[in-house]
Length: 413
Ligand SMILES: Nc1ncnc2c1ncn2[C@@H]1O[C@H](COP(=O)(O)OP(=O)(O)OP(=O)(O)O)[C@@H](O)[C@H]1O
Ligand SMILES: [Mg+2]
Image (cartoon, rainbow, N blue to C red; front, side, top):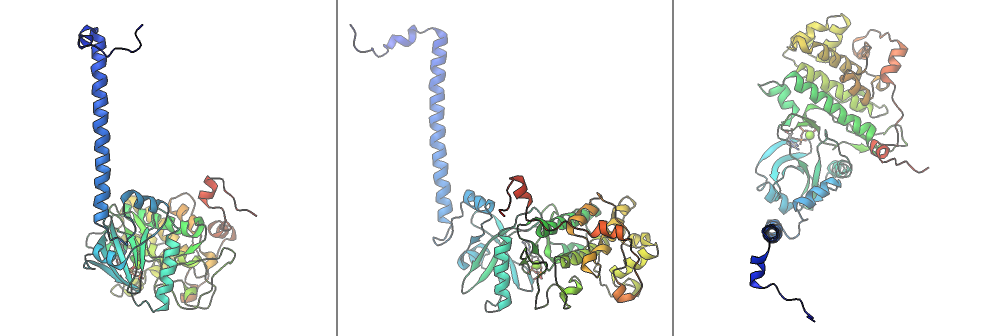
């Protein structure tokens, strides 16, 4: 009896049939390749972690790219120290611009991601602190392809700042008013639709309605391919879903875009954003500022000129002055009619944003708008009540968001 198997003798291999030899050698090759591959992956992972660790301040949140992306995914804004932002922006050397609340600098995080750092001025100023808190809590919870992402923030004694995704092309105002090279109509139309979708999301899709309060070309940023993203929820305020409107004390918005109710003692609703959007839409179609004192008197204020031409049935003439090609006239006319609806003096006459999106996309008929400027230039507006209902009626604000619908989640009652 032989208790143990013998190891293969040296002539064992020679005695194997040819096909067995081929299988045997192939298996050895596969095992060796797998071993080399596993060792190589381990090495890469180690060097990756080491390079991230050595570029970071030890007090700083980890910026490993996977964790970073997963944090973004979970809509968690990251906290940065002022030293970190200083090194990301090469000591705040590249200024992108400045607005009402501070300066904006270009920076690059240690993981290579480009950012725009908005350093808020005057920490002791109550308005700025309120804006900071509002932005962090509202932007951090919103996610839409046409909204600028808030990546993180810094909240220190020496500095308060917001860190946004960087938008390569900057803001829309530059392209509408100062750039020699004008944007083509196709791009402008996409910008108008994308912006409208972002506002519709803020008003109608977010779990808690967000009113922007400062829609204007400077707050529409463009990415490399000119896709629009709405920036600055600095003036945004979360609406209590139970309330029909928010009451506010101080004045808000930017002159020329702010709805009349923002500077008069009237209730303020999300319809103030529709008004600002209408003003923006005139500027997008016209590729000029609404107020241009260098134009002939009748054309100085674009919205009123558009209305007067529309009323006389001469809107074509206005479109020609915008240098809009024959192929785009129909769409451009739709856009100015929508703008006239959006800037109605009475908020309840303005359409809701999801209706604006439908009208822009040509999905619904646009009825002739009533005169938005009766309070300024007199005249009456004859309206067909059925048509008016079709344009302005909106779904009651629903607590069921699209995400909730997708996952069949409902609010417990
Ligand atoms: N995320 C960003 N990516 C690229 N550039 C940006 C970004 N955010 C802001 N900028 C640039 O910085 C400029 C200043 O922005 P800021 O928001 O401070 O001022 P504003 O929009 O002109 O006014 P407001 O304070 O009323 O918002 C913008 O016009 C834009 O060119
Ligand atoms: Mg801004």
